[in-house]
Length: 178
Image 1 (spheres, rainbow, N blue to C red):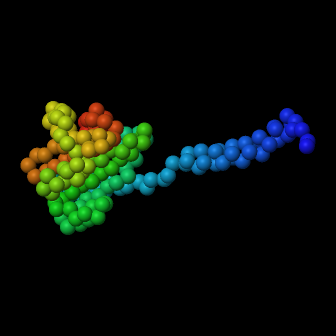
Image 2 (cartoon, rainbow, N blue to C red):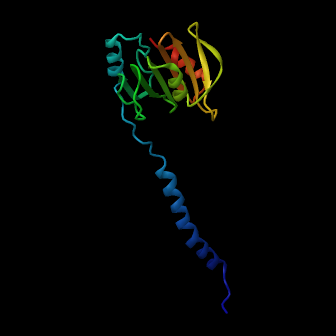
């Protein structure tokens, strides 16, 4: 029986380690490419909503540097939203990806507020009231505790701003709206 040398042990380890290192490198480098998210025409959707004059539209004047609009739709009653549900009142839905890759949504609707708030806050529960520019907004937290939403109901108009970034970031997001 031949004796194993240090050299044989090193060669055996190399046979196992080199393919393993290549596999690890491949899977780590494959995940580094950020998927391309198409830009949404948020200014066009806002212009349509404002032209309808059905409610005072809240929207950013411009997006902060590094932000991207990912969702923008102006819907009339009976049209389907992104989830395939028919809306029951004029609805403006905007979605933005921040420079640190946090998603922010701003939804405004004349649909009945109860079901819309439940769905849009992900069946959230009311946590209290916060102020944005001196106006009260109800703070909701989703069932899983991940998503925060600020809700304002004025007459028939319901506005909901949501994000996983936390209530303070949503307040900052709303503070730059026009």
